Amino acid sequence: MGSLKTTNKLPPPLPLHLVEAKIVVALEQHAYLLNDGRMAYQALSCLVRPEVGDHVLTAICQNDTGYILHILQRAEPKQVQLGAPGASEMRIEQTRITLNAVENIALHSLTDVEVTAATGVLSLNGRNLFTTVQESLVQSVGHFIGKAEHYLLEVRQLLRMHGQQAIVTAEQDMKVDGERISMG
Image 1 (cartoon, rainbow, N blue to C red):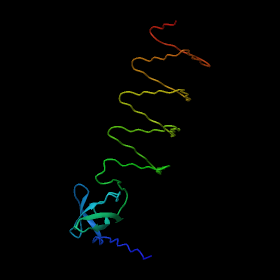
Image 2 (spheres, rainbow, N blue to C red):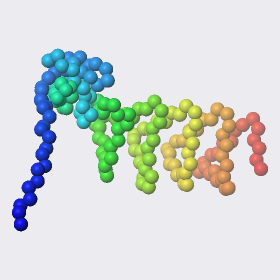
Image 3 (cartoon, one colour):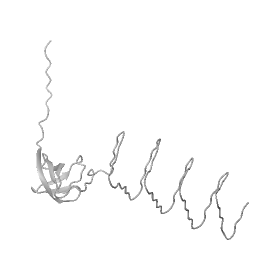
Image 4 (tube, helix red, strand yellow):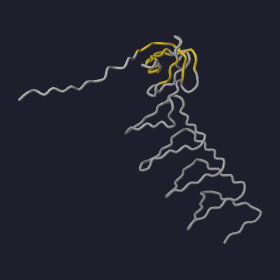
């Protein structure tokens, strides 16, 4: 038996040059002017948004188009912004995700924010909890249990409580005050 020869010819590699540069001007649509006079675009995989003054690693492709692949150094990296150029949505999928902040975590949206624990527990723990709602607050629960040192409720128009049975008890005094009190 003779030997089989395969002639899988690979195309020649594309000319690609890696260049270190510094961003001098931020242009529109994730484009940047570099200190060597070239223009480069933020690569999709470069998730940290480049800023003026950043020392970057740039790939110069065959058609002389430059792409910022990586930010090597930033003078004062106090804040970084994550974003994929051209993408309208960013998703993170993993079995577990943890966000830790020593001081503050803020979630902002112009429209909707949704937090869901479909089959688990949603826990909110804090020293203080403030809720401000402009229009409606709707709660629907199977059982509601609340404990408080003091509970103050102020309603401007109508307060209605209804139940199959209702029990109101006080260990000391109970006061019911109004212009007219109807019972029964």
